[in-house]
Image (cartoon, helix red, strand yellow):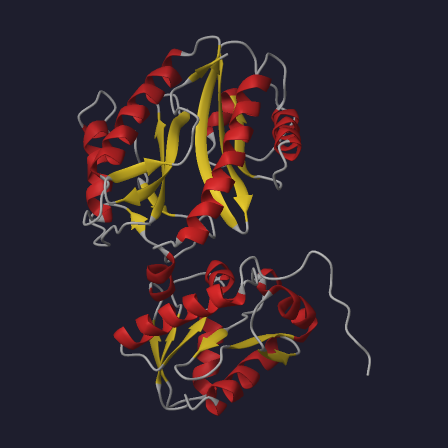
Length: 385
């Protein structure tokens, strides 16, 4: 008998018992929603429930099917089988060849699990599941009742346990290293690409994984909502902003920090207003408060300022693993989701000035019984270089 050698640097980030706990919680939510099963397809939700990051599903769905009383079943592209086996804690894995085969193979699995005429939840409002995929499955299983379960897994993911919170604290420690590198490296003539290299270098020196750099913008390029890394240099009397997240076991510690090299009155004024709005949002966070109430607290500060239209986006969102996922809790006007202890949220208050500059700051906070605990140790005040 040939033994299979383990593949280096693979395996789920947490013990199998942790994923079994998560799957159990998800199935409890399935029961509360009066569903017979759920088909999970969003990448972040797949990683949360199985350990596998869903990377192979970049152009085909990789459903993880959870049914009460049955082991979880993955339906994946055959090319990715070894990756799913190596990176997940799921034992039941069924492969299909290419996109045209997906619906038939997945429908056969659903039928075998006794779901052909049952009410099954799909993540219809999340990424990685196309309407054509759902339509093809319904054509194969005309008696299956499709229900939208987009918010089911996020509701379970939102409340973290000690393992997850510790991972987020470790991730945020690397974010703070990255922000310190940003602040210390800022000088006349440094380019965005050089800044990114400096940040990654300092994080590696500190023993961290590569950080996720959402954007680095210098000068006029801070007018872009998400920048690409370029060779554009910063000059004296210009602003700079970074959005970055350290990573640990798939968990991210997101943070927005800003700086001015010299003086720049418009962005300095925007940042002062962003700080005030952010602090107002943090002050109201506690268990029992709705996501919409947090948004309102920040929005009121801006609406009564000299720039009442400066905020044109939501105040924040549920974060952790992944950084953000469509369908997760959103801190937006009127959002009814109720905050609970051990949730983590990221609140980027990025404001738009009259000349188009986009500037501000953020915090990732842990909801506790006493209120909001800020996870970063780097002040959200404007850095002046």
